Structures are given as structure tokens and as C-alpha cells.
Length: 398
Image (tube, rainbow, N blue to C red; front, side, top):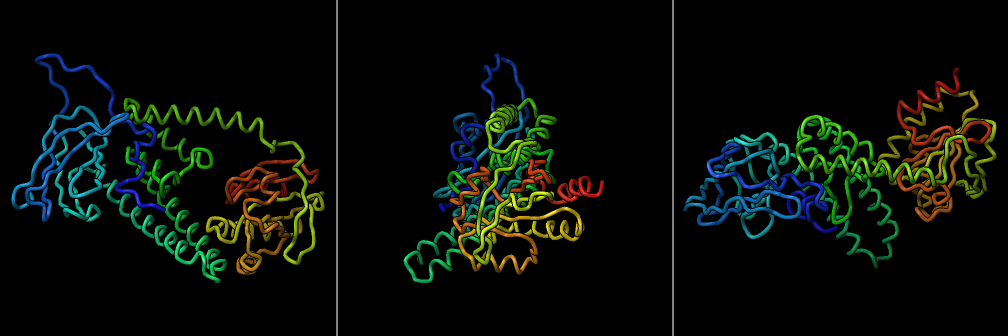
């Protein structure tokens, strides 16, 4: 997994979705608008070096100013700014840092010439938030880079299959951990456009932290918060258009999907841990929670605690749980069952995403659940946590 400089969503401006500047006609002679924004700073070991400030527009970086540090590394940038915008500050041999600046801010910066991560900034709340996010993002990329390195180094080793299982689990744990951090960042800073960075961030080239379909609720949350506060920004309007288009696409997709509420859940046959076969239809007469999961998924392992609560709470009711594992290691699968105390029905083809059951249900993420009624009809999908427990309470105790 390649490391991207700075905040990785900025590569090609995420297909122009983060355009923060509208094309405006030039001011008429004698007219002025905006406020004066200043950046004063000290670039250690940067005597005589150039710094370049550029604004991020729809399809390009627009030069704002280029200044040279004095012998001690001090510099001063001053420019007229009309509206809030994202900027990049370039210095040293490569890379850049990302800034979110309000018109009229007086910013203080200190940094190292060849170390973009070691800098401090004050006087710009948005830029300070971006630095906090960038630090966590860098840690994540470095951890994923180490996993990639070990994959390359040991791919031909005899012990690689067992090692790969551990590396897959580490990869999922790291990415899901950063996703949860990013989600918390978004909710704690909902009024700041810095959430756009968290929303569009990448683990690497083409690997988004939040996928528009699987994490549509996150896109919708950021969209609603930004439209309430920054509807005049083109970046926000583009996000709003993206959310509307995604919703239409999802509606069209659901119309043609395999799973429809009220229809019979597709039956299948798969193997239990002891090798015997089991069908979904064999549980007919009960409410069945069909759950797709994997031993290597941290989110799935956490959600297993909810399933244990459900089983305990509705013991003696017409309720069963059947989990389909997206694993390829029997040992890892059965160990996770024991470790998490999952005392219910389990099946797996041990083919990961190539499992016929996964394809039958169109599963593209885990955990994923389907609640089936005693007649075999689909009641609801994507039930988790308290929402799941409340739904079961409604069905089984009323």
C-alpha cells in the first residue's frame, strides 16, 4: 500500500468533489472584497527556501503566493481572501500540508524543512483540526505499509498461509479502527468543513475510508451538516449532488437486488464446523437472524457481543441465530466461535468472498444481517446493536 503525501483525498481533488472556489468575474476597478489573511512562520533549517501557498479549486491548484524564508527561516504571507477555502502549503523537497483557512485569520506556523508531519499551527481552528486528523492518518498509513511489506517479504515462505491470516486480521483491525476514529472526528466537528477531509480520506490509492454505498449514512450526515452551514460553497453543493445521485442509484439497485422485504429468503446449504451440512430452511418456524461475519473482522467480533445479548434475552422464544463465516481458515473460524462464546448455528464454505452463499445474498461488506420470520420471509436487513435488540423485542415479546 503506497503512502500518499499529506491528506490523501487531495490526489486529483477526489475527482473534483472538493472544489472550494467558484469562478467569479474579476472585481471592477475600485472595488474590493474579502479580508486580509496572514501566515507568519518559522521553517527550521529553511533559510533561503521557498514556500508556495496554493488554493484548491475545482480542477487545479491556484497559486496564491510564493515567498522566500530569510536566513533564520522566517517568512510572511499576506493575501486577500474572499471566502473559506482549503489550501496547501508546499516547502522542502516533496509533499505539502493542508490548511483550512477563514478570511481574515492571522496564522502562526512553525515547521521542519524536510519533515512535513512535524509542525505546529495556531490562529486557524480549521487548520488545527486538519493537523490532528493528519497525524492519525499518518499512523494508519505507516501501519498498513508495514503489513504490505511483510506480505511481500514472506509471500514465498512455508509459513505464509498462517502469517497471511494474521496480517489480514491486523489489516482489518487497523482500517476499521481508523474508520471509527474518523467517524468520531466527523461527529465531534460536524460544523467544520474539516469533516470533508475525513469523509473523503483514503487508506491508499483507490481505497476509501468511507464508501459512498456501504457508508451512505456517513455521507448523508456530513451533507446535512455542511448544507446547514456552508451551502454557498461549491464543495458542499458538489457533495450534496453526490449524495442525491448515490441515493437514486441505491434505490435503483435495491429494486433489482436479490433481497426484498416480504419475500422468501433464498435457501442454501453449507457446512457446519464438524463438516455436516445445514440449510437455512431447516430453521423454519423461528425468527432467524442470518449474520455474515469473519473471525478477522474487528467490527464483526465487536457485534458478536450484541448477538450474545440477543440470545440470552430471548432464550426460550422462537428465535435462532445462524452465522455464515467469510473465512478461509477453519482453525481461525472455530477459535473465534469459542473465544466469543457463540453458542448457535454456524456454517461456512471457507472460501471468503468467493462463497456461493455470499454471492447468493449479494454481501459486499461485513457484518451484514438478514432477519427472517417463521415463514421464511425477510423482515429487515442491516440490523445491529440496540436497533437489532429493539426489533427483536418488538417481534418476540409483543
